[in-house]
Image 1 (cartoon, rainbow, N blue to C red):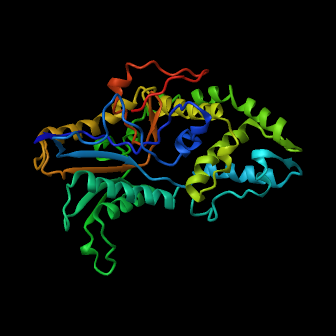
Image 2 (image 1 turned 180 degrees about the vertical axis):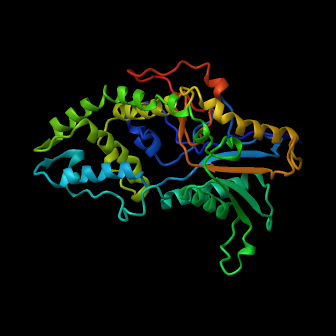
Image 3 (image 1 turned 60 degrees about the horizontal axis):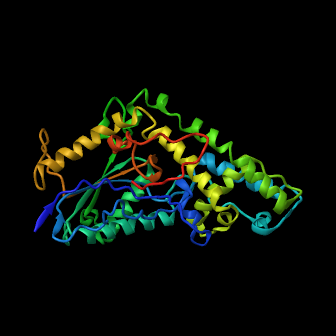
Amino acid sequence: MIKARTLLLFFILQVVCYVSGEANFNPLQHSGPASPYFDAPSQDGIPTETPPGCRVDQAAYIVRHGSRYPEPGSFQGWANLFNKFQNASYTARGPLAFIPSWVPPVDDAPHEPLFLTSTGAGEAFALGVDLRKRYGFTKGGMNLTIWSASQQRVLDTGSYFLRGYLSQGSYAANPSLNRGFTVSLPDSVNNTFADSLTPSASCPLYASGDRGSTAASQFRATYLPNIATRLNQHFLDGLVLEPTDIGIMQDLCGFSAEINGDTRFCDIFEPSEWLDYEYAHDLNYYYGSGPGNPFSATVGFPWLKAITDIFVAGPGESPPGSYVTPAQLIMGFTVTLQSLYPFAFVQVVHLNLLFAYLARQQPPAYNIRARRLEYI
């Protein structure tokens, strides 16, 4: 039996893919950070399953929180769009016929924004079940400790993961019977770096390297006005959609689908318009917290180095300078989303974990969408 120790930099993938033929086009796989999670296909002929004759004896995953409600700022955009639809006299046809009666998919506005949705809870639980079956590291009656950033949606994701992984109940009357433990780590301050799952917070220069918003805004200016013109001319009388309205409506495709299953906003836009929307997010995260930010690799390196030291030491061993023996499965849950070129949306901490590979790629243009897409 060959033992293969693998570094699994697990990105709950929210991937994007160019598909030939509109019949197979799924907008939810091109909705950027608003999209429900789904798995990427294997890359370069490398299977996702462990090869025959091999077994994994250690694995480390770093995972973003599950699907959530929108940020307060985004929800305000939804509310503004709702008010626009309600406070005008107009006729809407075709794919826009539903907008006069549309209601934003948040019914508890003071509490829901930024919190985990039921879809997100299910994603985390399913991941726990999958990893328990995939590796067989944890036998019945054993416990597992995970690490989490301190935001509530991240802690909740870790909690649901543990429930799926350990297949345990919640022993409210006797908490000592709970076998899952969470170590909550604060945002990185005072150069804590590897002692945090949000290390960019301790890098004063990190924000100065962020060009994501500028890049995305320049590209959005090339396509949003055209979409607004198309919809206004063909499907509306008495109401005028602005380019800013279009961006909000595209956001609502993914968010509505994962909050309450409503996919009507997904049907409004053409495949090429979804690819433009997707690419704008790629630019935002590539130049914001991906390889396009010169400080991403620096703040991500301590985590990568720490995990490498653990794997070099091997199962049941402590890395140099440590008095702790890590578990075979190391799980970290974090808050920040980034995208790694070439445009596979991944859910990770501020880590440019693949910077050596990515440095060889051509940086994406601001004014034209890349035709080729790869997965990380």
